[in-house]
Image (cartoon, rainbow, N blue to C red; front, top):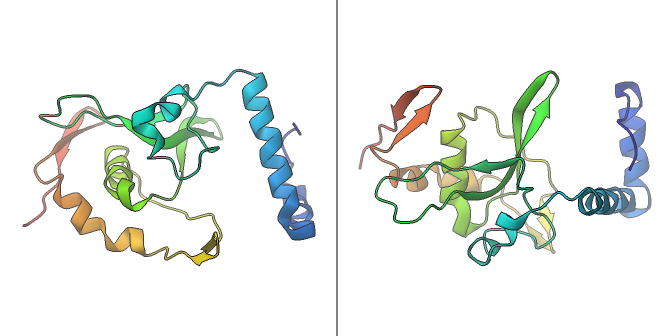
Length: 170
């Protein structure tokens, strides 16, 4: 695995990855997966039978040691804390960012619950708008916000020592 790319070389590095139909991105990702296996970064929660259908791809898993955990919901009989997402350290700030997959229709609620619970203010979509020959609608996720949050009406979430409730109307 390569070392960090200096900022002044980043644009050149990305251009090289784009060469030959973006094959460089595939090779770099495969190298990353190899290192993850060699250094024993387990992803057991991602591979649990109840969670597998929540993963967009079979080979993109949330590492257990940095995965984002969701809070239990009131009245929930079993703990359903899985979302395919990992915390990412920033410059001098641990857990500064969250990296996650684009939500599936069946995981929209979970995605927005994560956004709310972790007080996310900015969402950046870094992907192609065409997946497996189909055009993605990046606004579909955002158009479903009210429908998803409706389920969390009156739900109090712990936030930095306080609790916040989500004031939504019927």
